Length: 223
Image (tube, rainbow, N blue to C red; front, top):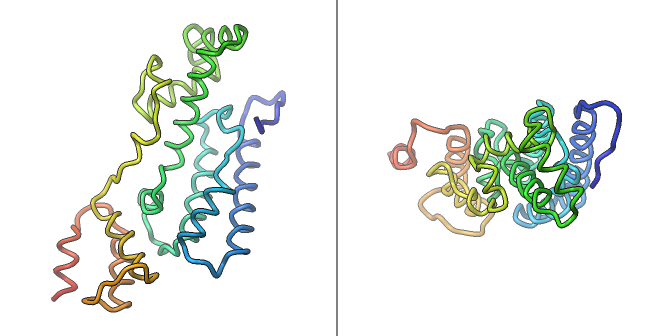
């Protein structure tokens, strides 16, 4: 499953190794297709860089997982050419993806559910022993608790986890940002604004989460 087994129970080395591998893969893909449009870049990055093999065996609550998330967000920023000040909570929704922590939690939840219902009696016994009896002293149970905290799904419902349910836009302006990028890259047309004004709107919207509404921004520009 892409996981190196060692006597060291700390997952830091394994997670950081995957982070470094992720950075290398993203850089390699973007290097070969640097002159392509962002939509093609995003498809290729998703296809070749988002496997995260072995992540279901990580301690998903480990602090080093955030390093992987940061590397992933930086890669997505490069794909779309997002401003450096883009808020981290906006990067994945703009790209039409789940936040990586949510993605990893969904995968972990599905893995735990598969183990709990495995046709292999040994796998089923070990998983149920860890989740229902050893609790936080068991790695699989700690991940189950993490999945609950991220997804809000109880143990009995882990098998019903569907990533589509979390594929929602959290903010009303992330869709607007996507539309503005389509205008910027000439997939759409917005005759009332020139390219500098479109870039300005993207810069402002990418750096805020609340306070300034889309209608307020449009009013400022129109004035």
